Each structure stands twice: as C-alpha cells, then as structure tokens.
Image 1: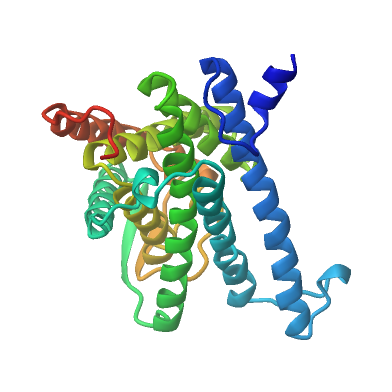
Image 2: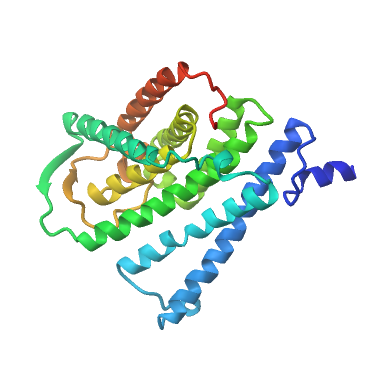
Length: 310
C-alpha cells in the first residue's frame, strides 16, 4: 500500500508502476501545477494592482484594457512552473517537452490557424450567418501589439501544459490515442469551468464540447506530425488572436477585447456561428477542424517516427 501511495505522489520521478498509476500521478501533477500557478498568479496580480494604487482586496480594480491584459500576461507563471516541474522533478530536457530548435514551426501553425478561420468565416458568410461590414480605420496599433503578445503567452501556456508536459509524458507509458484523449480532457475541462458554455443552450454546449475536443486533438496530432510544440503554440495563439482581436468576435464565450480590424456582424445566432459562445460552438468550425485533422493525419502517415517528439 505504501509503495502505491509513493508511486502516486507527483513530487518524485518514479516510473516503475502500472499504467493506471502513472496516469493518475501525471494528472495529479497537472492539477498541482495548475493550482500552484493559479495561486501565485493571483498573488502577483494583486501585488501589481496594489503597487499601481488600487485596492483589489476590497474590489477597487483598474478598468479598461489593462484590466484584461494583466491576467493574460500572468499566464507566463503557468509556463515557468510547468517547465520547472518537467526539468527538476521529471528530469526531462526542453527538447523532450517539445521545445526543439524548430521554433519557426510556430509560423506554420499561425498560417494554419488563419487558413482555418478564413474557411470558417467563408462558410458563415455563405450561409448568411454573418456579414462583412468593412475595415476598421480606427484600430489601436498599441492594442494589436499588446494583445498579440498576451495571446502568445496564453496559447503557449496551454500547449506547454497539455501537450508538452502531459501528452508527451503520458505517451511514454500508455498508448498514444489514450495519451491524446487524457491530455485533451485536461485541455477541455478548464474551458468548461471558466467559460459560460451552457448559457448558449444545450445544443451549442454539446457542439462546443465536441469542438473543444476536436481542436485539442488537432493540436495533438500537429505536434506529433512536426515533432515539436512550437507549431501548436503558433496555431493556438493565432486562432485566439485572429478570432478575438482581428475579427473582433467571441472566443470560447469571452467577448472581444477590442474592436476588430475587420468588422464582422453576426446576423442571427445559429449552429453555423455558434450562437453566444462564438464560432467554437458552431458546426462551421466542426467541419473545418475535422478536415484539417484529416489533412494532418495524411501528411503524418508518411513519417517513420510515430512517437512524435524526436
């Protein structure tokens, strides 16, 4: 019994255990990293607000763009703690996590995200779900840059946690499909907790959950295809940035942070545009994501390295 308890503790690097114990151990480590980083992040944000002359403990908070930016920049703590855990506890190299020398793959990931969103918007335009009103001439260049960095930090943090840490360590002990499913569930659950997906109705909630899993699977297979997580970091960050900032639309139930560069009007809420939750709960995203996964799997099929990280 004592041996089993020690095996499950996320503070050691023991790996000689059953697959079930190994999965529980790594999921516990994921939760631990998430909790510790969240607590430290809150403390840092409170400290920053206090240093700026606000009183966050009594509800006196900054307003406007800075109030939205600081929490996003705080996600860098999640990345730091996850990487420290991988290095100090698991004794893994950054290359093993997926941070290889192929950093330029992040640009490829960003291009894939842009292509996907162009197709999603095209479907919504054709079905009359949205209309294109023109280009915003008064867009804030400062806002574009600040939110661009914010989404790079936030998207990369989720990829390092879910793919770099969890998936890449799980696939050493259990089957690859199961590693992808478990890491995808770790990706989906926080989104369900932190975003109002049920506010859009049961149908959209179901589509949204399916799409979250599909998008997470896409992130996973693209990492395995290219052998690094740079590409999923680029895809993830660009998807959120283009959808929320460039198009000025809702991302996972969260309203746009600023007026978009391209002015898109939602004509009517339906299953193509995802209703109040946004495109991520729409079947246009479902179709395009499935097609993209199929294309990536086809390209990956020719690779000899079925384990992904090289």
